[in-house]
Length: 130
Image (cartoon, rainbow, N blue to C red; front, top):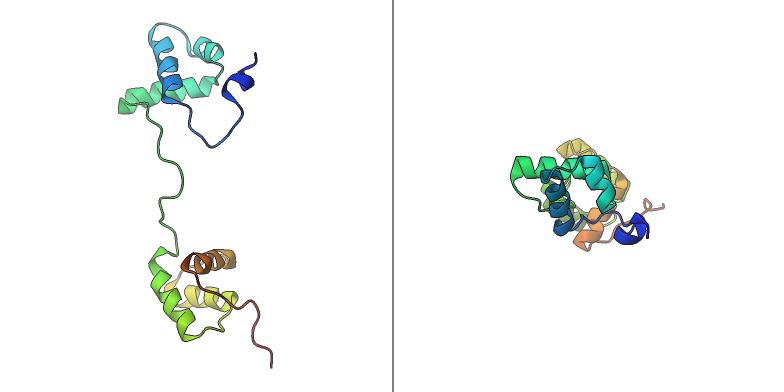
């Protein structure tokens, strides 16, 4: 059975704490990092990282993943809502330009579009035709 079959090839999920403990335990019992990695079907870097994590923090718990909710647009959500309510025909490009001019927030138009979706607001994609 290959290592890929044992642990899978999924990315984005932290390794189980039990595996982390086994890796550190093998090194503490005298195995080299390479031997421990080969025995557990993990990379040498994983073993190195777990030994360092245990030494520095005393814990092998995985760090939280993902965005903690702080982004460039967090501080201007209220302004964006009020701006769209005041002028509903405002395009995303115009709103992006106003954010840069008035608040110094330089973001891509798609970021503004995602903010509008999260706020449940609609937006106009094209300027009004004459």
